[in-house]
Amino acid sequence: MEGHPEQFETIGNRLGFRIVEDTAGKLRLVWQGARFPAFLCFGIALLLLLVSIPIVEAIRLRGFVGPAGALWYFPLMNLILFAISLYLLSQKRTIVVDAIRHKVTLTRRTVYVTTTLSTSYSEIEKVRLGIDQVYSGFAVAGSSAAESFPVPALRLFTTGGQSVLLDRGSRKKLQDLGKRISDRLTKPFEIDPALGV
Image (tube, rainbow, N blue to C red):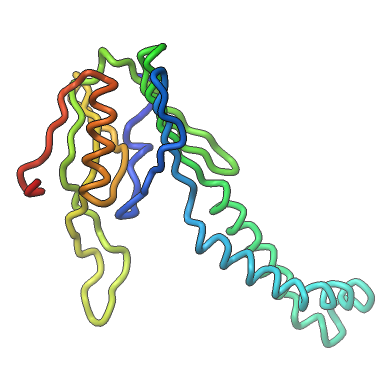
């Protein structure tokens, strides 16, 4: 195995890969980053641009001594929101099950780094649909933070005892995805009895 499985863990409770290629030689799954927050940040940044351009022009002409000098943070907020939206839009994960090369390759890409994990079919022991305990990151309506809740998770288990997270999401979708992957790998597909499938 080339790469580290822990780099493919995710703090979110679900990913939601979609199948973009399903041929005899290759199964390719893709997850694009969080689109709604990305477009929300981008939209707010565009609105702030209407305010930021006159402020930048006033600061350029009169410096920070004029009335617009006190509003220097608007252009800064604008840049930060553009950077956040660019980061969120650049997030992408792919899973490629290559029957020709007998390899499974996971790739995680952002605007500044690309991480890859690659393993051969012979290193994979099984595909398992189980339960991950995912922690909520914030308190809502008086609940305490860091409470965990069960989420269905699809994982590859290697002969060395390591597990690699493939996807989290709905049980039915992950069951279909797990069967597809295990059929291609010709490895057993296990379902945790706690899922009640």
